[in-house]
Length: 212
Image (tube, one colour):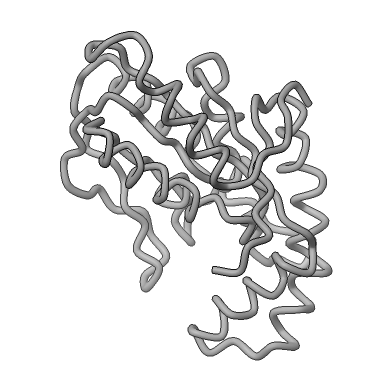
């Protein structure tokens, strides 16, 4: 990859410094990609907080809000008919990219919001432009090709990502053995094939092994 590996604290300091360049009228796009439970959302939220502490307005655009609806005929499925969420075709990437461009041009957008209860993307409230746009999700670097001034790939060990996924999915009543089986047989193979290649185009690699 093009960049060097940084800890979370070092990454936040460097990203915030980049965002402060160019004066108040310059807008920046930061793409934060990485595997499931690697720490993408945590980094993006910490970045928002750090920017706010510096008086810089920011907007976070989560890729998860652009999932296709469960009955969308274009939603990919495997040979057994199971939904596949860890591939680019599972998202409305073109729409997210269009929204990102509009926000960078200073316009407001009616962004999507994904309702996990009904498994559908709905249009949420109006999102106004800020000085820094943070696009965060599995394929953020792919979605922001050519428009992101800073591309970040967040990573952690497989054991850490699995432990975080177990802790997350337990809250939804999913049994540990089901979580582990899905991670080993579906999530990890898809992400090695489709998500990890983005690391080669990242400007920064953030190692997120800290227990949160």
